[in-house]
Image 1 (cartoon, helix red, strand yellow):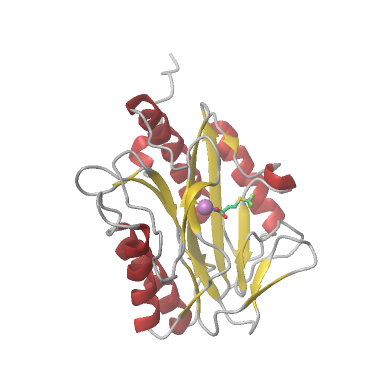
Image 2 (cartoon, protein in one colour):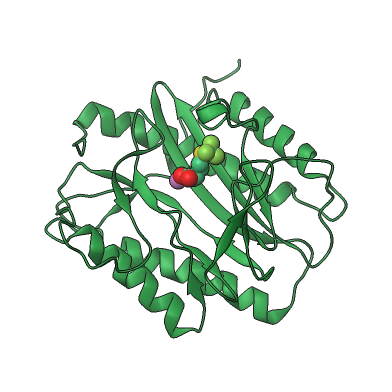
Length: 259
Ligand code: MF3
Ligand code: CO
């Protein structure tokens, strides 16, 4: 069942999106060569709490970290560890925040210091694929229109789309209906988009082949060929017109003035 949010729920989703996107920016700016992913995760947890939120991921299906940090060939759901990020790595950061009962979910991929131009291009195309996908999040379109736009952009540039993990509805729960594949799954019974739906759109794009495997930790998903992977995500609202990006720092709740 796809939840259509009421106005007061949408307002709460904006606040959650504001906190989630602000924390994502803060964490992205914090990542420096030599830092362990554990330090990055702890900083993420601190910033979430600073803004009055709670991690939506910690404890979700026993997920053990505040945020997801996926380095290079890691695709998604990377766990914090003693591993130190190095100059030339790319780091995907995924932040989900619960604020007053609703969730904002977003992700970005950043370069540590500098990287190979071919990897830089992978990141740019993945972000473009996200925007091309969310541009199709229009009332009357189907979910598969989002999927096709994302796949089109990624594959036109010679990259491949991860199929095992998909975007999703989001609200009081991290994962709600519908699922939003990043590839054309045929579109049979693809739901029609309606105003009031809140969706997390999140292409995962591999430089090499699309196939992935799970590490023994039961969470970290890696590209089977060991080549880099990028991940970008926004939570959006379907409206009567253009989609509204809810994971936007402008939506950060104003904190009470300290006098
Ligand atoms: N944005 C990711 C997703 O929707 C985060 C998953 S939450 C986790 O799949 F707890 F499972 F990591
Ligand atoms: Co998500």
